[in-house]
Amino acid sequence: MKELAQLKAEDIMLPAEKVITISPEDKIALADLIMTRSSVGSLPVVEGERILGIVTQRDIMLAKTFQVGSLPVRDLMTKRLIVVGRDAPLKEILRLMIENRIERLPVVEDGKFLGLIVHGRILKELYRRL
Figure (cartoon, one colour):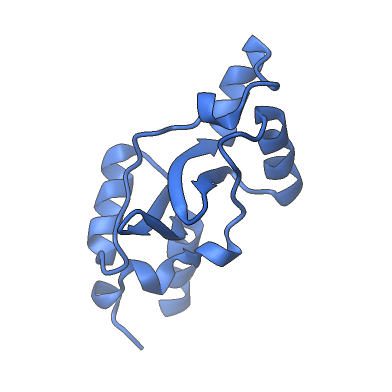
């Protein structure tokens, strides 16, 4: 078993094929419905294998006051993503999440979406090793 300091993004990420995603052209109301029914806090916005952005439950909650449900996800998603590569060490991942106050970190290589690191998976890994 790897030591904590040796863990990399690929060791703790949820692989892309297991991540629920959404298209940039899908409606915000659909994103809200998917997140609610799936009990997830965000949806990576993908086109093919490329990640274009991310939309979070918080984004949708803030936008609901403006009746934006019929707009495409592209209009609400965060486009300036903070991402890591598959070999990013756990310490770097934690630094990025803490400094940027984010709970999700896409893992990307050459623009291709490989997976998603969520704070809950990190906590489970830490707990498992105690």
